[in-house]
Amino acid sequence: MIRCYSYRQSCELGLVPPRMPDRADAQVPHEPATGRLVYGRVGHFYFYEVGSRGVPAFGFINIEIAAQYFGQGRVLLEAYAIGDGYQSCCGNGEDAPLSVELHGADGILASAQWDYGAILCGHADPVALRVELNLSEAEFDRLERAVLPAIAGSARPCV
Image (cartoon, rainbow, N blue to C red; front, side):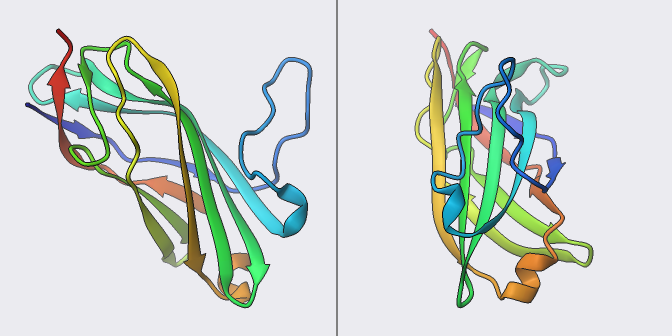
């Protein structure tokens, strides 16, 4: 096992982008018409091997995050990304955990652990998160950004 680390990444939350011929449709939320929602996209989130001087071990590209309010304090958090296994290592949510935090102006309002599946060497496979959170309507209205905090973990080299 190889020790690895990541940097904090974040994105602003707003409207789901409209359909356009030159842009892929949003992958989350799955049911946009069923509740108020906010959406954001993080371009990449990589794990780097400790001591490698910034060479990525594995990571995610095009991370989409959506939070949808269904009433009575129920919020569905969904995330979708492509696992980038075209680097030097492979990993998974057990060895290199990932969190998704929803922030307002005054800090974290909710968070979820993302136990993503294996990011395999030589693969670019989709990974997804779908979890229900408890947030009041007032808290949902204060959501401004999604944050993927910096974390440490481990990876296995590709052979």
